[in-house]
Amino acid sequence: MLEPGTRRVPETQAPREAVPESERTSADGSVEDSVEDSAGAAADVSVDEPGVVPRSRSRDLLLLVGICLLSLLLVNAFVARPFAVPSGSMENSLRPGDRLIANQLAYSFGGHPQRGDVVVFDGRGSFLRGSAEPTGFGNALRSLVRDLGLAPADDSVYVKRVIGVGGDRVTSTGPGARITVNGVPVDESSYLAPGDEPSKVAFDVVVPAGKLWVMGDHRDASRDSRDHLGEPGGGFVPEGKVIGRAEWVVYPVGHWTGLDRSAAFAAVGGTGGHGDQR
Image (cartoon, rainbow, N blue to C red; front, side, top):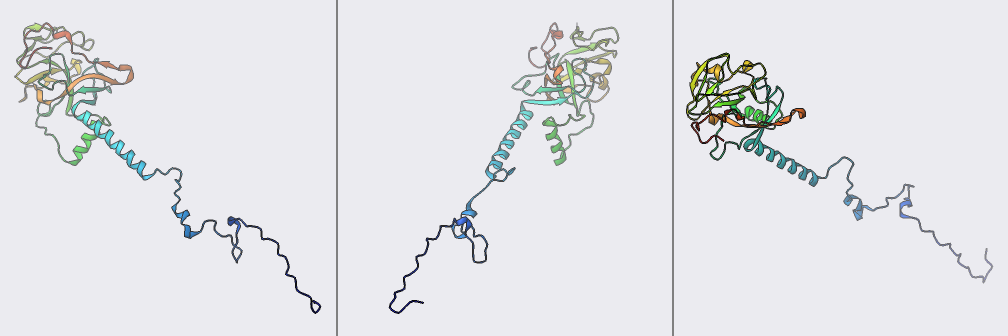
């Protein structure tokens, strides 16, 4: 107790040590949030989670894929188109499983198939009698997959060598003889399969204007114009059904090669029914 007349001296309080905001505790002993809700900082901070692509980047990626896909479709539709060789009818020039590229601009701007060309064509209406082109969404989807080269061509697509063009007379007397075009015997030894004769079937045809007479290089294993002689189309392929000229084998790697027009027909005179012989 203080004696009478003695003045109370206030105690000196020690300064309070600053407590970091991150270590402040509430009355119940819990640690207070270091960032107050009123500031809204936590809500505004965006942290990219691993493996999550930002929305803007996703849109850019989809746009890039779409542009690439559209470009590929345009090239396949109008410029160059891949095809898989399904059989050995063109051996040894083409082998089963080869992937070739058909140049769809080869006969544009007034051009026409020429003797010796290897062509890819739609056989509906010539080799496939009474076959109409299917329609509908399912067929469109299948065509898209084929055009992308993700599936082999359908059974209506053929690859053969042009032997005669419009106006040509093409003949064969059968085994042991060369094929003649406009009276000129043609030496086909540069591309015929070893051991094959030019034709074991005798025929004598005049190719109508705008049509083609085509045969496989592996004559003993090819179903071609000869096999359709007695049919309404006479075995002739309309030029309008030609998809393109086969120009490159791009797969397998060991069989990369170009498919040049054969020089076997260089001695054959005349222009046929459509322009000059190139």
